[in-house]
Image (cartoon, rainbow, N blue to C red; front, side, top):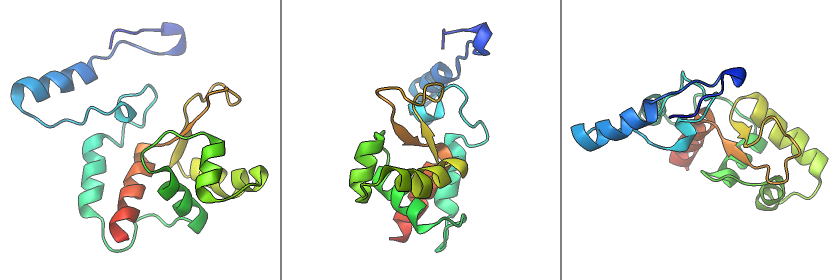
Length: 144
């Protein structure tokens, strides 16, 4: 909340603290997960909207995805995983195929993001679900 870097376009934001205190003092139930409070997060998909998507989901998922992306989302669940661990969970060993058929479509659809977007070869690079990806993951889990 107190960090500011004008050169990178990052301004102070007390939203997380406000949500925390509203929960504490007013008895509200605001989501306090980091995934909803990160810099450059999709503002249109807040925690409340993700919950609404969960409540209004029907038998069929609202977004059509390939079987590979569906498998990737189920393998990730709500974790931050490296590419190697993801490949093991999905059961693939050929890295270029995995990147082309699983990671790229999920990233392009906005379901997946990297922990260090400015440094693609960072030694501790991990993949995690976006708010949109988490909503779809919850839909898929409900259908099973």
